[in-house]
Amino acid sequence: MDIGKRIILLREKKGWSQRELASRVGLNPSVMNRIESENRPIKDEELLKLSNVLECTSDHLLGRSNFQNSALVDKNEEDFQAFANSPDLQKWYKELPKSKEEDLRLLREMWETIKRNK
Image (cartoon, rainbow, N blue to C red; front, side, top):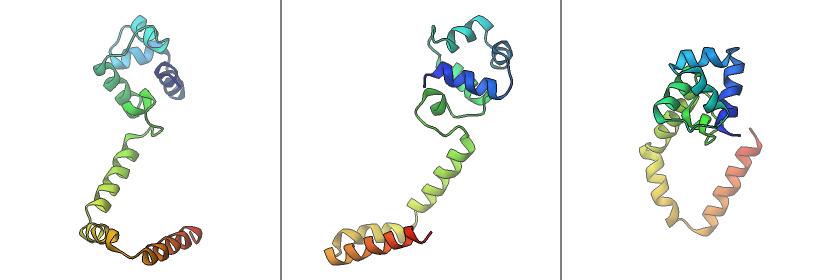
């Protein structure tokens, strides 16, 4: 989906007219119209303003992510960083390649069992 369509969907979800969104972002309504119809490229600072006003990530507007809510992305990233920076995980990760093939097979089987039992 193109950026113009994403902007329109988010704007309509909030019940705003194109003119109201333009006002909230500080753009001329004709500029907003050209951005939504993709007759004018969006500038970086406009993208940032739109993502803030529409309460979504700029990656979502650009079609790079399906995460609309930046708080969710931040929380997911925060959780991942805490996980990835765990000293226990780092030690395990370094030792894993030294494991025997049979041990790796058993580990995969255990992981599959855990996933099935969720």
